[in-house]
Length: 160
Image (cartoon, rainbow, N blue to C red; front, side):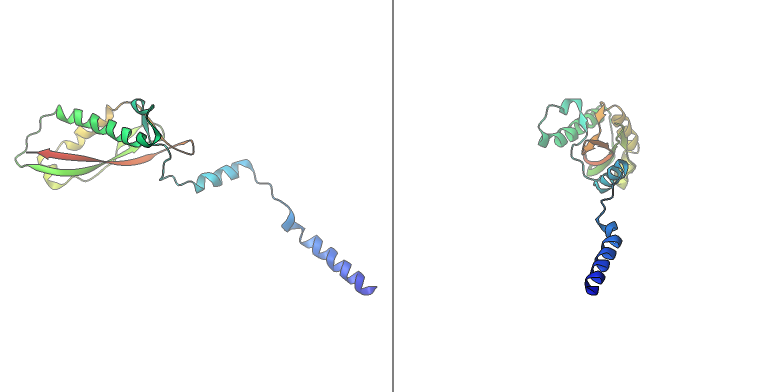
């Protein structure tokens, strides 16, 4: 009989002290959302930035349409400007564009090769002007949330 009592007292003590492990903790909604946002990989976008002309494209064509729109716009702008050089230039530069979650397109700072810097000293200003006249863009999205995205577009320069 005494053993039964000790056993019941032990079981009761175990149940009382281990209840904290069985209680489900209710987390607040803000904390759950914050943890979900922290887990997102903000470097990967599910939907690239969109120009109005790209809205009716298939999903797999959206990024290509975005890049082509920018490339064609810059090309049209550059062909209007007469550039004379003392040497032939055949080079590719990568133009870093930051598309903010607020729909702004910004030219990030980047280094030009020495030959381009000396032969076309105002190229960065020309690119900045061209980018400032791009049509309005919708930002990239990740899980339906607008995000800032960095794109590096190749710019091939061939001057003979």
